Image (cartoon, rainbow, N blue to C red; front, side):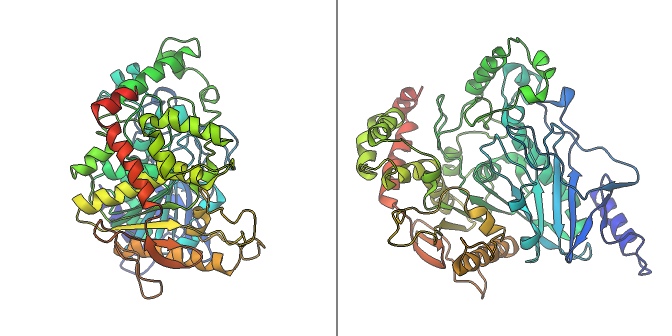
Length: 521
């Protein structure tokens, strides 16, 4: 079927007589013809359905193949974002499984590398229509850029015994991840028509999107769907835990199902059938910590503790480019006072409290840098560092590790001089949306954004980030643990706070022992 539609697309758009019967902004996909727009040399398609609307009886079901349509489908506007708190610019709806394509290709036979973006938002928020996710600038570097929507919050990740019983695989809770996989399957089957190469697909994402990239790299369901992965402030290598913390967000299916039972009870209901009848607006999270809004170790999409899977070499062995920001903890306060911070460390890390407070000593400031660094490393630094070490030890594909450290707005004599780069700041740099007219931006912002855009698209093209017009980025290994610091220029260096990361590593190793598992119940 795939080959049939590719041939039809080629025959219709560029037939042997040289006469094109479709304008360049129209493309034939498996479901029918889509009508996009021409924007400064790019062909842009917004709101292409890649699955049936997951509504009614399809709420909390795996995504189903999209239906075919007659005539030409207009794909010039973003589709609504998934249901979530707040009001995304494109609106929100349960009918949300759509993707967008930016392509510089003029014909289907160009075989350009493909980059598929997965947005962040704590698995509770996010959309493809956020202006910072506009793929036009990366596409102009010679890639086909795709952004894929997925269900979030309780609609995307609710686990429940009844839902598991409904499933042919006996599981529930990872519907948002299955949406991403369905989007990648659509890309594999259709991207040739947009001039992309289905055998050269790179997935990339930030925060929850970067964590999702990590999970997709470990999932057996994604084999062959992508060939490179970029994770920005992601990684999912912590052990499961009933009471979760950043970096230890994962639950077992049984734990998540029990949370789902309690969630249903909050509505005064007793069954999933009753819950399906509620308006979606009543189900969505209004905050970041409600149960049922995070992926789970279900034994199917996510087979096991990802750290153990990587130790055993049980993952998709593809090149990865992974990293995090220098001051991620600034965005996630770990305590308003030193005492509050110390008490939080005791509550989370138990017998490792003293070791970690020595590694991350607390001063008399409520925003002490060491406290922020512990938050950064527990949630982002250690998972990313562990990913790099494990894959470099058990895999054959190259690993490229970075730290984004761009904060020229703070002068050396500023009281904020110790502030680094907080969470999420990297996204507009990667998408090359740094406004030169903004007085807060300077020449180094534009330079490092251009460099990052080049590294990211090089990686999609070659499986490594290097070319003649950017500084050489060596592959990471345990024997040569060199990383790239991005900002205000690109330079190599050592892993930040590696000695402290090793203390955290001992904590996570202990957490996987019988004693550590029992303590964390």
